[in-house]
Length: 551
Image (cartoon, rainbow, N blue to C red; front, side):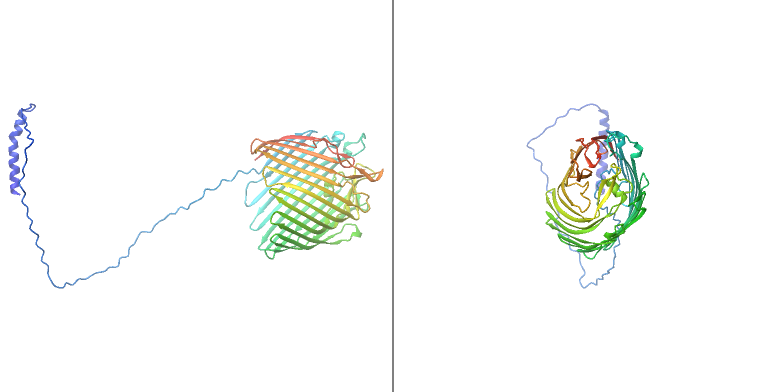
């Protein structure tokens, strides 16, 4: 260490004169000569190395006592706060639902038109809706405004959905106006004296639910119907279907039906009284058995009514036997033997013939039995169906003109009528853009004492077609062909054969968007004044154009 310090001191002393010479000759380059010897070899003397081994450390010999100290160590870790994020599928956005539509238009014959459907959007707790329609035509087929018509409908409805229980209700008002224009041609009449107006009010509540294997329902409806001459009908109707599922195959059903009506007419009812109570109580218990492709229904139909035709009795018992068999989803055959009361009320009769005069007798029809057989065959999206039905009906109703005024009708009843219906139909379905339906019927009647089946057709053809092109253009068409009807005549007991009625309609719609469209419709495009009731020619062609809005 001392030697190293001495060398360092000598080196520093030797540097002092050199430093002073640098300062004197600063900035000048000195002449020098560098000699490079290519073949000169440098020899380094060998280094001295000491290879002596390190002597081992002396160890004490003999046994040694070793002690071990074991300590229990319990590792503790901080609690893990794992926040696991569940994988969620992206919810599919619901398509926009347009639950409301309003249509408005105007047509030939001075025909204003307005129709609206209003409903609330998707809701799991309740549903609300309203419907309104107005369609009138000032000028009709006879003497212009002497044969005009007017139809007005207002309805509201609502439903509440609970756990296995649904409560519903609806109410409505209708006012329809007609004219008795079936008078002799050229006869001058006062328009106010031939006017007929019908008004109807009704309210209905319903309840439907299920508890395990039990299903039940209840509806009660109160109605009031009247015409311009104070002929009126008050009705109260109850329906209560009940069913119990004994097993997957076997069910028992007990539907109950009650109808209480009071009909009054200032011109006299049945030419005897001015007011009458018409009541009906019915119950139809039956068993329903289903096994694979086979089902059968067996029961009886009990009906009690107090219509004033004593020879027909008050209590009626009808058969209830129906069966169905499906062949591997390609065909189905149905057969049955049934019967029951066919209900006639003042409101239902005038819906079929609004030119009914005051004082017309109103009774129910008694279908003692009806035997039927029909079958359906399914080929791709086409259904072919055909069948036959035969029945015997007591007290069947037929419309005939009044003797005193041929522009007004009354009703005659046949004690026993045999009725035959043979039909065939084709339906094209399962396509959202194309639909078509065609049906042909033959009707046969064998009456007892009324002469002919007045104003009943012998054949009928109905066709309907609807096609949507490129989601923009909709074409609809309908055809109605009926013939073989006879009307009473003073010149023949067989009556007068009315000309066949041919009525074709056409409808075109163009959709600018899902919310807005324009339309044009044409009724009776062949412009025929056919008669479905004697003395009442139908209106000719009527064209209505307008627009519709969905929201």
